[in-house]
Length: 402
Ligand SMILES: [Zn+2]
Image (tube, rainbow, N blue to C red; front, side, top):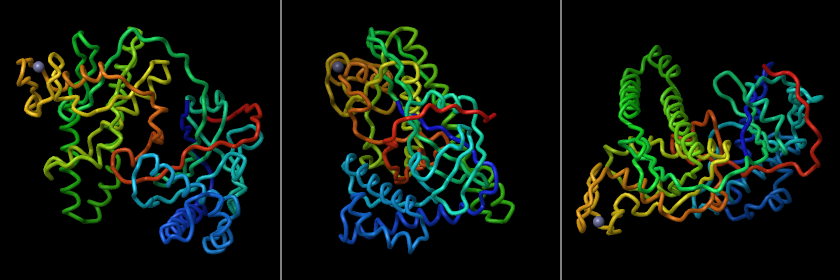
């Protein structure tokens, strides 16, 4: 399985700013070339045609320029597998490099060298112990994304860990993530486990109100408070989701059961909702919750499948009637046989019954971003699929860290 290890770079990093911006600009320039029809979004072809130009125009060294091409080609590939026609845009300054091609660990310590970046020789890096542990267990080390959060730089490194052995489940929990209730988990025929969403929704509403007030005020001190609050809501949502995911996964493992989730890849583009509800829907934490459940389940060897989401909350579990009027907000009332229940419980029941596919079969690339802003903001952030260096792996012994 794939995980992201985050290392914090210590030391003078100010000169990295310009490199990260150049890298982003280079990616966007390459996208304009592709869009103008000069070149197909293929790493080789881009290199052949634009390597010299990219290096000269954006002041990048060879490996870094090639990496920009790989990122652009990867972004197009991701959009194609998701059957989307958007033009990739790169907003955040960042830098992606492959292991041993542009970056490496120095002398088996946590220190990072960036020979591909002018002046970027050695950085001392810090990591929390779970992250150091993941590095030590890694069978392969892949790409590194260098990003800036506030005054600090973080290296986000893709690692491949050995898979936890899974078991043959004796039943499946259907998990329905909703707006009113955050999540309902149910094994068909048993009583449901309900995680109420009231507190979370209230928290989000308060935060939104505060933000609106500060934006209106527009003074310097208001902006200072805005900076401080930035990301607080997302951290809160992420924390809540982790707590719920932990409950669901631990329960499933104890009972030797699997977990079924809705395959909600297209929901953001497919939904049309009234404007008043939009903020609520878009900030909806379903994506985050799903990712948390999936990752935690993989960590503990709990099998996870994804099912088709169509009509899960309006199909009657008793007579299979799919009439639209069966569901009115929280209440499910079958128009044909009279069955009644909470609509999210009905959703979870239907999910647990449907046949599903493993995550790897979905083809979409989703990236585990522990500090990810893109997760909840609904923007098109393009991330290339993790690629790994092809050289045979040397045993990596690390010292240092915290
Ligand atoms: Zn019915």
